[in-house]
Image (cartoon, rainbow, N blue to C red; front, side, top):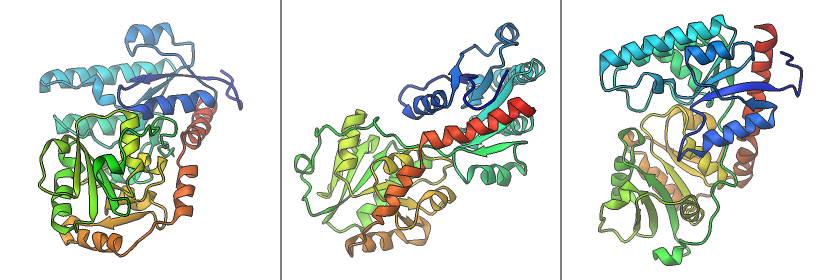
Length: 344
């Protein structure tokens, strides 16, 4: 197959889309804009054999889907079947890519299987796609190895997906126009650190600094005038309203490889309040993030900075939005995949 510039590259993605996760659709659309063509095939021995001459690139987002099970024995058997299919695909000439959104699943059921699978993928796949600058080092720290070939294709923002419609306003929520407002999307998963952030806010924030608490965390009643709860799932436009009327976007993760929520804040050019983790340190531009370490009591310093009038670097917020695009990510992937198809 020809791989010169602007020649089509066929790809099949696993999964081809994820309901409620627009980043996958944006990612695939950006690949199509770079002359990739979707040619979806089921990842089975039969279909791999049937389509063996078509030079289809196989793109895996969350390979754990292939062996997830409540039974450890069943998971191991399904994983071994995945290994055999990967080896079969490689013998037939397919090129395999791992879109490494996270080092390990957020909820690991059988740790040994997940660790074995990551080592196998790094040893066997033709390309590992890092959607964050810290991803490769994170895997190295955990496994002592890197993929045979890797490319940094940083996650893009969500332009045109989240559009405010005015359902929520500061007035409708009872928030004074002059107050500083922090937005927190809380689904109360442990790794996201939502509960700890809420506790810190209650402890440290003065009454004139507000928090908009959207999601599962909003189901709890707080006897605090400066916490405005918007319970449950909200549409993209409603979330856009809430982010738009806020001054800061809270990201209190305890651990993260790549945070889609960070790039949502980039979409709206909102400065971030984030835990002092490698992902946030490496991706926030100067003057766009206030960092804290909950164990060292530095959240109080963040509140003091906000209260004293800290303002973000608006030029750097603009630069972040220009830099973190799916078009830039897919261009980097295209160069790597074209080289692999050409040179092996």
